[in-house]
Length: 119
Length: 112
Image (cartoon, rainbow over all chains, first blue to last red; front, side, top):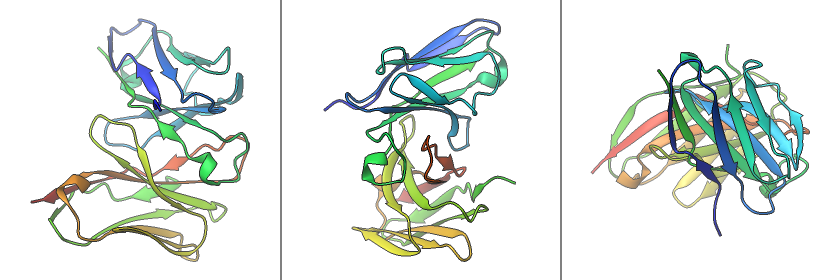
């Protein structure tokens, strides 16, 4: 079946603009994660949803970052008043699991990412 | 200090070589460990996971965990040009969120 999809794949924004990044998880996956990957770095956790509930937003770098998943499927990551330091690849991942004691159902499947460049 | 440290490389080897990729971690509470492979302009994909000390083998890939020294390794036998990618180690704790903590990634190039 289809994997995780993200749109747009590339986004160029002028400093100060608002952007919205979309994630379509694998159908039926309960858990959804957003990660930020700076150039030459590993992904860093931003936020986590279990169905429509945002259970962890400890990784969001500032109050300019906002995420939602209103119907428990598609998720949107919004960044307000973008800054140059926001330039990165934003990855979305989904998994089947609801609890996280780590078994194969916890496997996180990643989308291709949205590459955001802020000028 | 980062919770997971990984040498970024780049690492360049000839086809057929044995490759060793390594990470260290600081928190002894971490219980499970994963290796992801990321091709250029793609998302990471899971290669292997383990949650015990010792070795786990899958084809040409072997994951090794030494919890006493907080050291994890991935070995690739008979490396192929198609193995050229960035390899990310990751770890985490059983928790309500399941968030992963990644190393920086090691870029590997296998030359034909």
